[in-house]
Length: 90
Image (cartoon, rainbow, N blue to C red):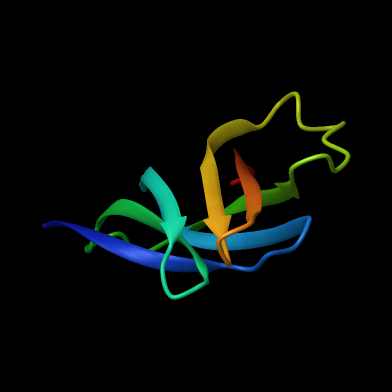
């Protein structure tokens, strides 16, 4: 059975997220002033895959993200804008 799950993302330049193998990332958004990622996953998946998550504020250095996929922009605290990128690393 496929289900949608949410995963918190730290506001940090680099982090890794373990998702069930074959997960499909749907979106990122602000929930209670925390960045969360929503993914469609097969709940019978027994192995995880590591994903590299990159979060950059507006005006911050974004070099080195050419092989990452842009997921979206998240507003925090009414004034801060964070741009979230991902790269599957297996």
